Structures are given as C-alpha cells and as structure tokens.
Length: 256
Image (cartoon, rainbow, N blue to C red; front, side, top):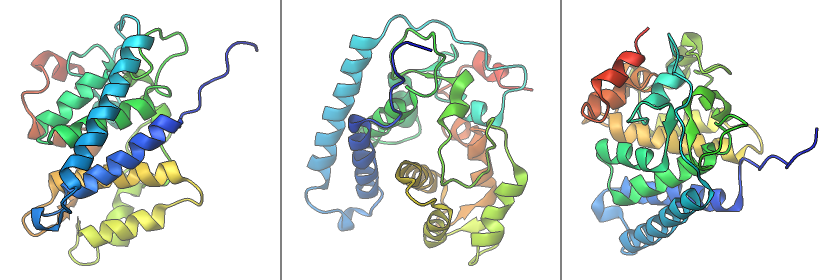
C-alpha cells in the first residue's frame, strides 16, 4: 500500500540521546571521588540541549493528546510497568511525565532529562497506533509491547506478559555470589551473555535498564535481590519508591 514510509525506530538524534543517557548515567552512578572534573558540566550540557530538542519537537509535531485506549481489564506486566509513568491515567506517557516520574524516583535533573529524552524519543515512534495525531514523543501504553528490544532476559514475552521461567533463569545462571541476588559484576556478565550479535540498540537498552534498576534497588552491600527485580517488571517497585506520583483512581485501573 502507498503512503509515507514508516520512520526508522532509531534516528540520528535518538542515537545521540542513547550515548548521552548511558554516559550521563555512568557518571552519576559513580562515587563523587571517582567522577572526573568535567562530569557535571558535560552531563548538564547534554541534558539541557537534548531535552530542549525533544520538547521543541513535541511542540512542533504534536497535536492534542487524545485519551488512549484503556489499559485493560487485566493489563499485562509490561503495561503495568509502563503505566507508572502515565501520571494522569490517559493511556499516553508524555515526555514531561517520564521526566517527572524519574524526578519522583529520586533522580536529579540531568539523569531525568536525558532518560526522558531517550525513552520517549526511542519508543514514541514505535509505541503508537497508526492513526495517532499527537507528538511523536508520546508513548501509547496500549502499544507498549512494540517497544520491546532484543538482547534482553526474555522475562516479557512478545505480548508483554511476564514469563516466570525466564525470570528464574536470571538467577540460576548468574547469581553465583549470593543465591537470589545479583552483584554489579554479575549483572555485567548477564548483559554480556544476553547480547545478540549486531543488536546495538538492544545492548544499550538493556544496559541502561539494568543500571537504573541497580541504582534504585541495590542494598547496602551492593546486592540486587530477586524480589526487588521481580517488582520492577510490573512497576510495583516504582510505586513503592514514589507512592505520591500516581493517583488512587489510576491505581485501581491496574488491578486485575
């Protein structure tokens, strides 16, 4: 059929956002004594410029954000995960909502800005119905499974449902120091093992996701426990860390 060609999911700007996100995150997660002197100005430079670029694109391309389809009577784990970021419960995650969610989780301006720009820039063109008229940075939760990347653990299936067997494999294969918990080095080993040849976008997506999870969920001994990892797959970890981000009415939509 004719019509305009579909935009590639990975454009030059989103590649830059990806590099900036990973670079900024790696700097911010280091101990202060380990951060190079240029860390703060570099992260701020990338954050301000890239966030502003995505906001400008949102204004220029966007129309009114109409209410998307309901999350569903019993939403998948992936939809519940994504729904945390949809503060007003309209089924659409905007750039500003992603930014606000990261701030609510305790991240600073730099990491929140770059993360929002990367997430909405990468997923907005993929996770949307064909007749959507809103900004290309808006993520429609009803289509969130379209944003599933490769080189992951397989704990979500292609429809966004949780796969317990694949989740268990994370720990049976990689939790060598303490049963049912992962160290930072073990996460690195898992990420390396899951990499599919040439899937650079999947590599970077998995790296960013697990580094953010580790920074949020590790204990005082640097261990990321199984129950904490499990809670991120349905978003319950986010709701526990930022209980005031979502309204009680929206939470009822996520109940089966």
